Image 1 (cartoon, helix red, strand yellow):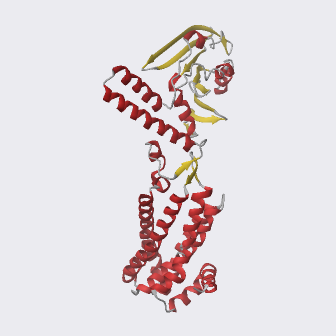
Image 2: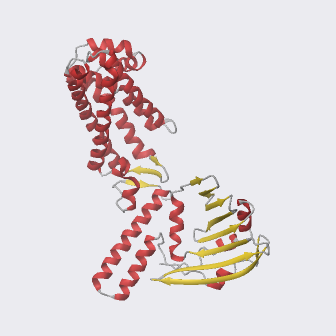
Length: 421
């Protein structure tokens, strides 16, 4: 292996490709020489950098956090991808060679291998981007795009196709390469058990099938979702065991635990007593007098939910409704709702509907500017839902009205009634 020669070729194909392709087209080469002296070495760059990133730095997954693979899983994935990439180069070169007559070129297996191998240079070198934070993935993407351009420039010199037909030749080849890339990812994921990284993602985690060797930071969204899936799996096993015993009471308790796990709760919670929750409904709200009030608590299978409602109105016809709900054991739903940190907004000609997070608080707003009606709600302590709805001069008036509720005092009760497992 002549390292200086390899580096000179890399530099030339990247910086002066038009000139270098003419040189490459006239060179004598062998399949073994191209693989041992060029392909095997450069294809190892993204594989090695990917291994380092997977095993040490981790991958940032949108809405989930940073995902890490164990050294064994990362090594297995890297080696499998590397081997399949070497095979992929050969397969794409076969396609390039087979397509040559279609685009007015001349078939030559060695020339086809040369044009594919040297075109991949930009993409392989850009694999260094896996180690760079921020702009790293942009570098990887830029390398892939530049490789397409290199292929376009190289086909006339290697496969002897007319320059005006190089575009179509390139497009068909790239389509084949993309399909092959997807297949490589699927095969690598299946072989190494890391399909979550390759594309299984949240779906696999949500079903409790976390790939071997794959972990998320404990406090990240991915880590919390994985904990939830494990709770679901454990509750399912308990329910199955209870059904086999024939014990009705045990079955009822197991069902309750399964429901609690499904709603994101790992423990049972006794919702606040109706009178306790009703105490958070003020006598007046935004200058309006309370004219109606009610509170209730219900439960089934060991789960409880409490709700307190009040209506406020004035002689002019303005009215507001205030609702406070204690989700009890289902409070886990509130936590799960905030895990993904998803924000959404829908606007119409007359208003909007949006959900967002304000610090650690989940907020929902809805407003119709024609009807002058809307709602404003927040989730307090990942347990209590507090909503103000009704008519107002503007949407901010509803937000101001909610300021009349002792949200801090309500939030201080988030752990009240929580039973130790």
